[in-house]
Length: 518
Image (cartoon, rainbow, N blue to C red):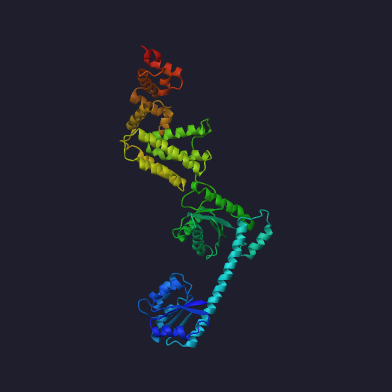
């Protein structure tokens, strides 16, 4: 039985309509009655009636306001309007909302019966149309699923084209787009339907293509190829606007399919692009080509260094750029690190783990050699753990950049003099490491020869001589503490004890053993 709700502020009329009209014979049952529009809203939300009979003039909320509210809320309810002669002009406004009938008071029973019969026929016709449309969608979705993920890869192309023609899907070209909602849990299927319903008006409603669900994806099949970046960006913005706050990642199939049986490879490419979305461009319709990051030195990558050695070099270069106050060089180094990890074939998890290791090492070096207490361990822990939560590599790079800059010591006034002071300080703190002038020159954006001359002008010594003297002074201190010669050599940065011996004798005029045991 269909449901009807009667809304009128006159109790006698409400009662009369409930008892004088043979509702059961007409296929209806009176679900409820209300005295005004506001009261009716509550009843209608509870009962979801098929027909509402409402007076045009009522206190609190009149019939026209009631219709406006229900129409805006997309209720499929049919309306019959009641009014007096004086309200005819007013009632015509309601007719613009597509009401099923308009009757003058006092209500004629026969006329009401005829109107209700017409409403029932209208409801049944619309229901039949919806059922047919749903059946067509089910048939179309079945075909689309077969085209997107065919059970038999060697299926008959002619048969598939024939089926596509019957479903109205035989077009001259196809563009496949897959969209993955950024949601999880039991409500995921609801989000899929919400996205599909939100996009149908701008895709199917404008005859641009069709939409189907292939969990966990919403699939858009477009008739016109998205040639050019501008058209892709325009469509993405349309989808984002229509999604009304629902977040999603979308990708194209990387090309146009010329026939229905060619859709599957495009769909698989779109899915692959979504799976690699971490490396893609944020806020865009993804494609098969990820962004390009700064390419590391080819000689470095083609050399014999292991992945661990390259990581140590990245840590050193990044830390020294921060420590030397070369903040402009930090962002390119972070990008170079990303490119290095990608060229090593690392996936999303691997890149995040590498950035965790890199950032952790640089942070601990920076904290260990700094008197600043501005950023506490809680902030460091929050940043490091957050590395695994980023959805896009570009966000990870930017946040890493910002955090390391915030962690670095506040720079003193810049200039060559200040840079040289920091360089000298760095040598005194890192003399045991593999310090090279060309490496430091690259980090400070100077040529090796120019930096070498600046350094000699400042210290009166060539770089390597100055470094050797710092190491020898530290070696004398350690020898005086009773350490063995080979231990001291390794501690101050000389891997070869004989080389250490020759350097020590050069600057001190005697061997390390003679110095230790005068």
